[in-house]
Image 1 (cartoon, helix red, strand yellow):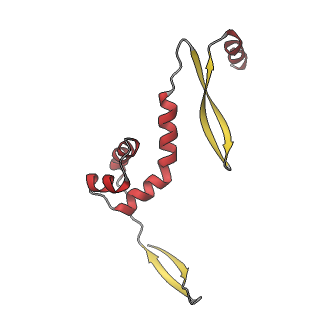
Image 2 (cartoon, rainbow, N blue to C red):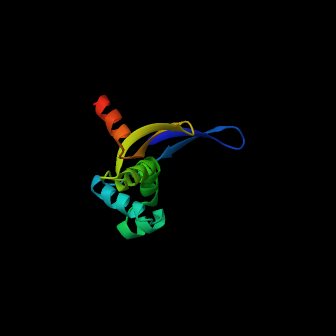
Image 3 (cartoon, rainbow, N blue to C red):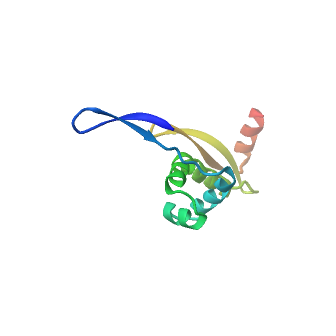
Length: 115
């Protein structure tokens, strides 16, 4: 149980006990797959028979990470381009973004110098 206090409209404090509901670890990968396929939270809860609050909290906590991992996994280096991770500051948070460079001698030489 996680006790905390909430201010009532009258200004008095009210003691509230909230129940923390979690998702079983073996179902997290299924929820991640459903979320990345575009299902809503309600659809996921109906499909997997899980509590709405648990699924909502899991997606709220990890949804952005999952989307960035998926986007990063889609961009693969090949014979025409090099993909390197770059960290950017955006809206007050740091994000890891894949940066695609054309595979030209200048970029290849610069990466070899760093290694």
